[in-house]
Length: 145
Image (cartoon, rainbow, N blue to C red):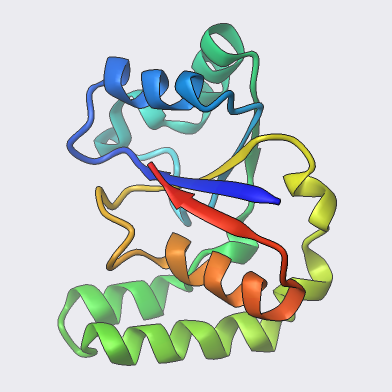
């Protein structure tokens, strides 16, 4: 099962939606904790759902279960954790939440992308989510847009 990830930072709306159209995305799962901030620009929850439907014929789902807690995120941003420490704490959080049992594999039955803000997946929790699910479920092919 092929699953994509994308971040909206440093992308124009044209580039962002063009990438989604190019791979035929039909479902976007927003894994941001906060998806209504003015900083989100064209990816604010309601706007994004509208644009996805109109431009890609895609469904929008917000799934905060796949986001770090606000405290974990804030502590990392305040440099109380290194990236490696953040990774470990987030992996522990996903295990504690048992996301592999609470998230249905059916969510990925159509071309699906996980959305977060980071431009690169290298230091983003969207990569960690899919690596964790790959370890638990197997059968995922992950491509970062």
